[in-house]
Image (cartoon, rainbow, N blue to C red; front, top):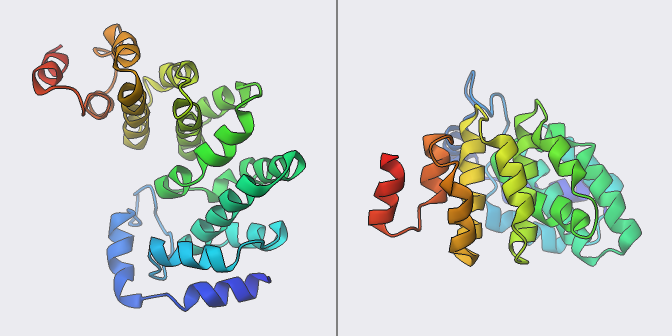
Length: 232
């Protein structure tokens, strides 16, 4: 399927009346993290439907979409990559992983990272060296740092927490709110599976981490315990 055909199917779901709300939600104003991003008004359920229709699209077509200035086209490209990754052999998965990491400049919003990093980056690194995650966690790019921590959700879902803790330690002093939220979220996901492991991590760090990160991490704790952490 050509890029033009995929775009035609996507644009069939565009709704101009929702563009302004999407621009506000994704902070596209001057000085905001999504400054200048372009939306055409396609909602996630419709994008997922188009992804199913376009299953099997080639990497060349997907690469073109991923380089688009239009947010929904980049989002659809990542949905297609995730779908392809789950069905590919090792060579195919490696090609998708390499394409992903060579295009992080276009994976430039929290929703794009969150819909793809664990499946592709975490999925590829599951039985391999995790060193690429540590490199990403130290990147000057906000989005590469978010990719690093969100990718560990692949390991969390399989009962492996050490890489999440390792990346969280690297990002503990990160200046950006979107990293605070992402790290706190992943720590909470650990706690959903092993509360004792999360509490051990928090014991010597809860007074050092940003308030937002801590709030996200302890969101599911009993209220009295939450308040004890917040008073520290």
